[in-house]
Length: 527
Ligand code: HEM
Image (tube, rainbow, N blue to C red; front, side, top):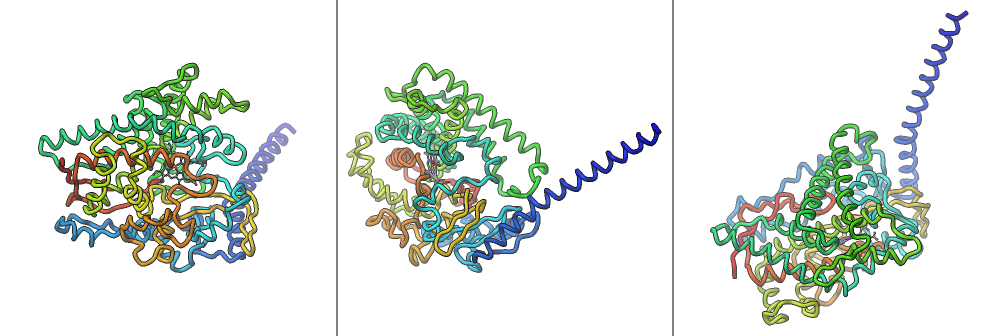
């Protein structure tokens, strides 16, 4: 009897395990296959087509293979004369850095469906479509894709870039005043001071006969130092630590061969995921120490409060305050969002000005006209009009933020367009900035003067030029980046002239942001 009951318990256990296994497999098939297929069928039924996905990678393998065939265009094989470089380097980066999208666009049009793993994405590079499905009251129907939330958490936490709905409203309301023109003006001396130190380093290199400088490395460190001081008033050492940890984390999280959307892909590189989360925690700890020490005492730089002090003060006055962890996440967001994008705008500008020395000359003359040799102040910065055109043209050709993503939080119906709840959207900013139909035949030429008469560079659609995003979620740091850009570029142009090094290889690549993946070596000379 006893033996019978042990056997039956054993059998029951095996059967339960069998059922559990069956239901787990069934649930996985449903979540990772049937549900996405269902979503995809709905999209197709509503007229959205695209390349055929393969389980479990979707179109990831095709994307990888298509990009492997695109080699960087080498300038080192040619004589480094300016004219020659101008004809060998192409600004048509959409067809090289994003060749998969460029090819699918030719086949399926400006809006189509492609898959990252088991996640279907509605690819959008048509401004009118984007306007229709996101403007007005529909803006609140979109959030940020869940599939990226886990990946990006160590970097942005639950900061402004990631939050949604009422929580986003609340965060944005507290943060926007910190970026007021008055606050930004107070940060200018610090930007000048930090950049002057960087340029002294360049001068020292030249004094020992070294004229080739990898400017991208200096520019990004300078931008990190500026944001560390203007945001948190933190020491150079702490700033350097946050910067280095963020850089390592970014390399780990956003290497191009990531398997986004592929079920259980994290298990393939558990060490890297763990390491990134560990770095995220270390940065949190450091920022937490800074914020806690600040709670009672505001920090001033040149008599001006830094961003975190302004945030803390704004927070004190509110009924519903940001928690300490939310403040840490916002600080991380400022740090990351605040240095990389501006540094890239400056780096790509130096590359373009090296390629087009006539614009270097024009900008130098403009700085002299406006400042008369005196240190630049905020009124003078607004008068650097041509520099503003160069800024816009650089952001158009080499947009540091190459795309934006959304996920529909509810069914969206506009006219005959139907987008089911849960649909991801991939907005290809680079494609719109390089679209011949929107910009004309000179779309891939560097022509800052196109911004002379129109703020949107004469683009045929208002939303065809959107380096800072669109709608309510437009970049909060826009004015900070323009101020920093004008100050750093003016100081460089006043002291040095530069051309592209023969060792330069043109290799724009996406790693969350759009980077010159092999650096920007310039030959620099004092004026
Ligand atoms: C040239 C420089 C910059 C570029 C090209 C840029 C680009 C962008 C873009 C495209 C978005 C929209 C993303 C989306 O819709 O998903 C965005 C949002 C944001 N940016 Fe920037 N950005 C720059 C500088 C900065 C700076 C200096 C800061 C802060 C110190 C900053 C902080 C943010 C934040 C917090 C958001 C989220 C806004 C929200 O969702 O409400 N950015 N940026």
